[in-house]
Length: 605
Ligand code: GLU
Image (cartoon, rainbow, N blue to C red; front, side, top):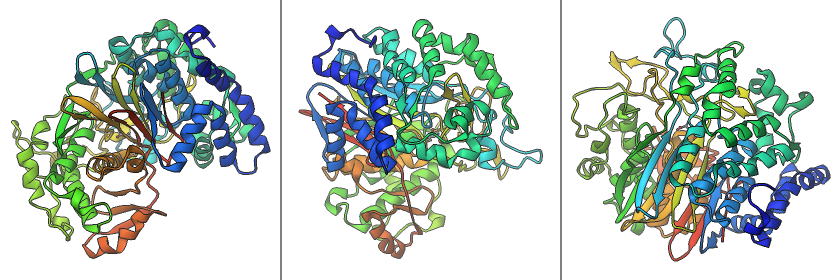
C-alpha cells in the first residue's frame, strides 16, 4: 500500500484498503466454489470492505446511502472504494475522480478509460462557481468528412465503422484528469494512481457484467491479437470471479504518475497508440502523433436551465446533454407534473412529447459549436420553450408530422439538415462530493462497449468518431454534426449539477447513448417533482422517447403504461434499458443512489 501512509488513514480505512488487495484471492476462491457466477462476484464485492457490503445492501433494499462529510457514487465498488480512500485522506472531489477513473479503466474497461473521453461539471466550494471541462475526443487532422462512407458515398454499416482504427479519435480523458487535478487537486498526483496500479498488478476479480460482455462480443474482440490475448487467455473467455491482472496498464499508469499526461500524449505510449490505429488489420485509421501532441481540454461555461426554481446545469456543446435535458425540463415547466404524479399515463405522454420535440431540435442544430454556428442559448430560452410547450396536448400524442425542429433565436441565418446518428450504450458516470463541499459530476466513455476493440498498453481505444453523422449532407443541406478534422463529435453525455439559490443540491448523470438524456431528465423530475429520494429516483422504471417510439423498460411496471400510451397515439416498444445513474443529493446530509441496473454503489462517511 503506497497510496497513503498508514498513519494518514483511520484503522477502518486501512483495513478496507488492505481488503482490496486481498480481495483478488478471496474472489478467485469464491468463484471456484460458486454455482452461479453472479452470486460469486456479488459476494466478492462485499469482501472489499464492510462499508461496501453495507452500501450493496442499501442499494438492494432501495434506500439511499447517507453520510455527513463526503460521498462517491460510481459504477464499480473497487473504483468507489478507491475514491473513498482519497476523500477520507482529505482529498478533493478532483483528487478522488483521478483515483475512481483510473480504477474504472481497469475493472470496467469496456466502458471508459485512458483511451476515451469525458465531460466534467465541477462546483468549486471556495469560489462558488460552476465550471465544465470538455475532454471529448477530436477527429484526426487527416480525417475527411467522408471517413464513414464507402466508395459510392454511402454510409458504412455501424460495426464496420466501429471495429478497428477508423473510429478512433484523439483520447481526452488523460488530459482531462491532469487538468482537473491541476485546477482543483490537493493531494499529490502520483499516489492518486496507486489504487489502480496495485489492483492492476495484483489482479481484480472479473465482474459478472464484464464477463457477460466479453462472452457476447467474442467475434469482434477476437479480431485483434492484443485484445484477444487479454480477454481470452488461452482462447477462453475470462469468467466472472477470475482474477485478471493488467501489468501493461500498471506500467502505463506508472509512466503517467511520473510524467503526467505528457507521458501519454508524447513519446512511446503515443507512438504505440498511433501504430495500433494505423495498422489495425482490415480497418486502419488516420490518427497521428500530431493529433495526440496538440490535444487540448477545453474549459467552457456551463449551460443552465431553470426548472422548479432550481438551475439544472451541465455540459454544453459539443455535448447535446445539457441543452436537450434543459429543453425537456423547460418545455414541461408549465405542466403540473407534481399534481399528475408518476402513475398517470398522461404524465408520460407529456414527458415523451416534450422529449420528441427536444430531439427534433437536437438532430437539426446540435454539434461542436467551435465548428458550426448553432443557436445555443436560443434553444433553452424560456420564451422559445413555452412556445414549444404550446404544441403539447394533454392526453394525445403529437402526430409524427408535428414533431419538427423549431426556429429558436440565433444570430446566424443558417440551415442544417437533420441528423440521426446511431449511439449504442457503454460509458460510466461518477458523482462525488468532498468534505470541503466541492462537487464533481463526470460522464466518461470509450463510446461502444469495448470501443474500437483495439487495445494498447493495457487500455482500449475509443470509437468516439462514430458519434459523428456518417452522412455529410441531406437534401442538399449540410448536417451540423458531420465529421471535420479537429472537430469533436456530438455527445449525449449529460453530467449534471442541480443548483438551488447558488448552492449545489444534486449531482447526477448516466451512460446510455442518446437515452442518457431521458434517464437524467426523468430522474430529476422524480427527485424535484415527485420528491423521491435519489435511490428511488434512480430505481424508477424507465420510459424513454427520443425519435417517436416509446421505449418502456421491460420486466418493470413501466411496461404497464403500454396500452394507454398506444391509445394516445404512440408506438411502444418494450426493451432492456441499461442506464447507470449515479446520484448524490446534497442537503442537511448527503444521500447517494446507485443504479440497480449496473454494479455500482454509493459510499460515504
Ligand atoms: N458516445 C456516447 C456519447 O458521447 C455515449 C455512449 C454511451 O452512453 O454509451 O453520447
